[in-house]
Length: 409
Image 1 (tube, rainbow, N blue to C red):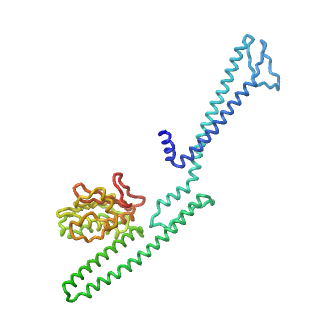
Image 2 (image 1 turned 135 degrees about the vertical axis):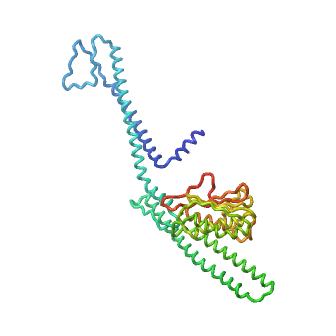
Image 3 (image 1 turned 30 degrees about the vertical axis):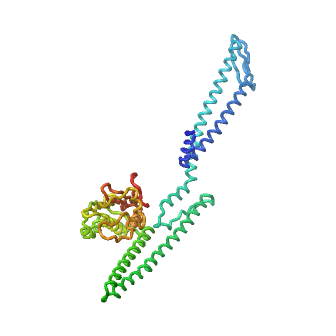
């Protein structure tokens, strides 16, 4: 029973083209087998009914012109009737055996030809589906304007391709609407916060009581946190839309610039920084890649311990790894850190200034660059985040290691 259940499962796992070719070959085999068997039995009955045994004298009688004789058996007078029967049975067996062998060989050739023709026909029939699949695999927010535009008769495949094109048009319209919303929100949300900050800084600049000073300081802190939150959300929205343009970016240089920018911050937190890099260019948006590194380095410094280390590594294949020596993190909690507004524990170095969007922004930026990002908890404490980005050049796409889990890509 188990074997019989596994057989259909293996059959369903085969490609459609293979199954169509196998079905056509199987049908030809079944039909040809029936034809061969029917011909075999009909011929056997015909031979039995039409054989004539002609007894000859010592000198065989010549057949007269136009005489219809199915089988002429020449026998010597000394042959007995039993010998003649045996000879006839042998001749019948050889005739039918040759017929069966020849028919089986021809049927085998016919089945192979039918399977090959079925393979070719299935390929032509499935070509539109392959085109639809390739288009769907290639599409992202950067190239939603592309369409399948399948030409041909108005059949099921044509209607499927047209439906897919209509769906792409609706998605493109929704993406454009989102872009306009983000652009408007970027202005409408930033302007009131900037006005509030200006009023707090200038309108309350004179002599104030301690209570007013404390309230002003808290309001400015809340204002700055709101600005960072809005900036983070808008940055996530921008990266989720995809990249409007791509350019070669020297990843090793950007990593060095960002790490140099945070050297003083790390020193103030009692954290040491290390950089190991190999020259490599990736394809993407330099502003977003810089923000990616800034978020990773900020988190590595903020969630570290005094005397700890922040390690930044860039490989020649476009790999970026940032690790620190912070607190212990349960391995089953690592993936949750990529969710918005999720933190594990409190910041060990510096105040808790983040909005909880650091790794969420990292995931969005890496996804916009068609890369993969994974994180793992270090055995001695801390977190290591690794991102693989597309090197500059056509046809190159990163691959996720088999023993790692992708975060949101």
